[in-house]
Image (cartoon, rainbow, N blue to C red):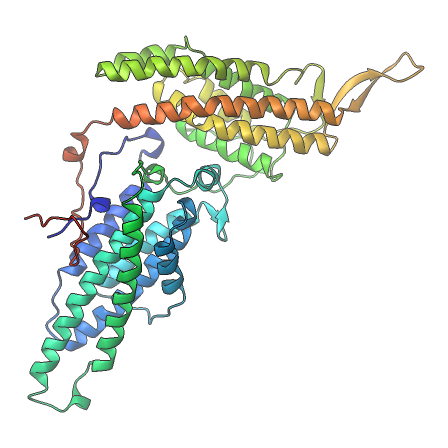
Length: 455
């Protein structure tokens, strides 16, 4: 059996944010296991083979739809683009039973998880927006290409088996009486050979790039948005509150949710607290370090937190004091701030917030720009020739300065967020994979250059 490097399971740093929920990695491993089972089947009759052949077609179409959603998250690759374009234009007769039909459903389930983060073919959540911006998910694309290549190998085995059975039956009956035509077999052969060619080309391109961890692995289905009219919600855990905070901030930046200077000031205060180099959570995280290298990385993180802390401290200058707003933020946002603030001593909660800060800062900057352009931010001043004080919309220059402050905080937060992600990745327990049931990778009948057969 051959195992492609892209399908070799890796230890994944677990997050309490996904506790009790299936992650992208969980669902993709189910798809890998389904393909492996499907590749091993040998139907006894041509009728069963015909059913499984339709299942292979359905699987490849489902994989094409999945590739359509994740291809924009990686650098452009001609192989993956050609495979996606080739598969999405195909049509197949749906089948409900069979091993390959199960594999198609498993891939479709993974696609549905991604679809909860999309509107049409564009991002609809802060997590997906960030992935579109960085375009670094080449490992995730490689996994899909390797899975397609494995399925093509299974399809080849199926057509060879079908030809063998047809040859036996031709001694007993006429061609017209055989339930599976040669043209049907040749059609599937052409489909899998073309798909395998494009998948192989994409893998060759990816194997020449630097392999980085896939941020998709810990992605869970996006929770449905709760409107402000539903009232403040109660969060069961602080990590779900972090996710709600990210979602509301993203919607505020898009103009889909109301915002206020007070809520943005609260965000800056929360960010300044978590980026304090002397925060309690850093001391707790230091005690968890298992190696000297981890401690060195954590010390480097503390150095990077200092400018981020200062940037978040300076960002809200004037908000809620000399600058007020005429709109209110959702009550759910205030509840999320409270929940997260009560648990900032927990390194897991602090980590989730640290990783979210770059996007939160960019969203806050966009929200302030929008509020300022709409005249929703006001400041006090004396009317010319009068003693009374009046509230007037702030000037475009004031709006730009406020937005620039949060944009600078977002930029300063990028380095510690990246460092902490790397720290968490390196700190992953390599024995975790032995404790977790992991599906075996499917076989690939055409080895790549340099691959070795494994027993």
